[in-house]
Length: 282
Image 1 (cartoon, rainbow, N blue to C red):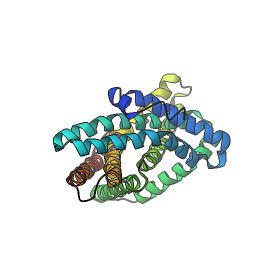
Image 2: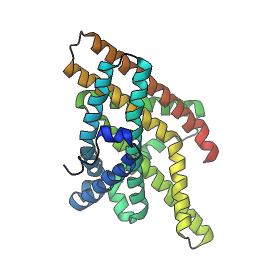
Image 3: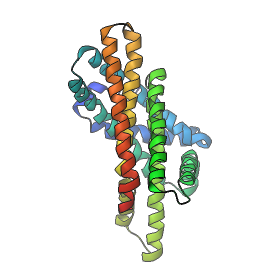
Image 4: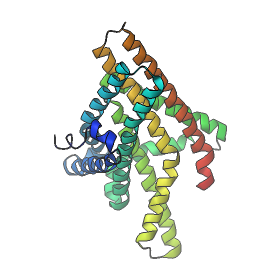
């Protein structure tokens, strides 16, 4: 109850940046408790513990967003209201990302191998699927349709489990953090072989490059998943609170469809950035 009471949607909308620090707290406690109590299964347990802390926030957010759908008929105004929720949810995700990637970089290699074993395996599978001289158009379609699949998971999880989309998003945070940490450690090792001794600036510089490398397309992707999660969640809440034949429910369904289409568009742009923009700098 202590972690659950730290944040609520009403306060989060006023100061969305505070959710960044709450995300760091949730992610860090999830990591420390998983290593302490369930070390052998910590790569998944840390995600579940982080998700459990976020469930009240997500459920209350979906209720508020569904209530907006039931009371606001102007679609443009509705989208502006949804953006307020998206802001603090993205900050929450960035907090997870910082916590996970920071522990990946600072912990001993043996602990990292245990703590992030599932995430490391996932990245290995992804990398094996995009090697072998795949052309950019083929890579784009593979990345885009894979992201669409994740988006559908977010929509369905939010529909069937209410706050279920936060699990998919938190898992993605742990995977992206693993990619950031791996990138940073590899670059640090390369630099150390050339320069010799490294100082704190070198570590911070490589860590920052890792963030930039995966944030260029990663933040738009996660934003799209949150949009999809809100769409699925408000349908779920609406089906409980409203008659399926009512005019309000029809308006909610239209808004949910608009949100889903917006998420698909964001994923399209994110895939373009990942395939054609990110390789220019990295």
